[in-house]
Length: 171
Image (cartoon, rainbow, N blue to C red; front, top):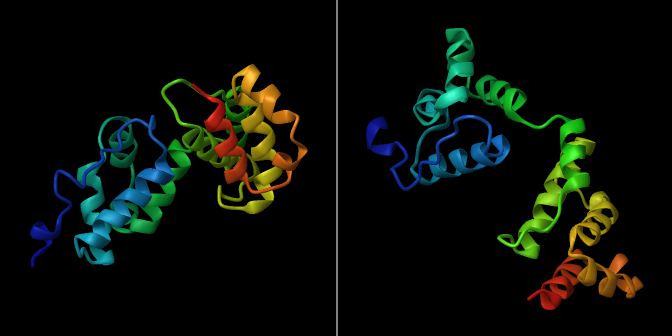
């Protein structure tokens, strides 16, 4: 199969345009699609620009050809340009509340992602768990948060237990 046949199909494409989407998540999806399609890693730098539009493409187009040829350099430069700074991540974290359109699981994952950006350790670091628990409780609707706060075991157990308990109390 040639390079063109291995390009991500329309269903695989998630365009990265202006930084409204999470840059790190976009690269995870891009890399997963490239692997699934059998795209050789040495070709990722050549394919990635066709999926970058808007402000991200404007930033990309300013780089030297040498930078554009190196996938790792391109990825790092776009992550730097479009990722939240620790301060902006903190501001988003402290103001984050559960929205009606989100599940508690999605809310918790976003809290963890923001906490990871604040501390520069990635969202999978379990040392973030105490902060994630507090931020999730703080961001839940008042009556749900108040009901959960009376159970101290929720503050020390698995986060999934807290998330399940919160989900069960929501309409």
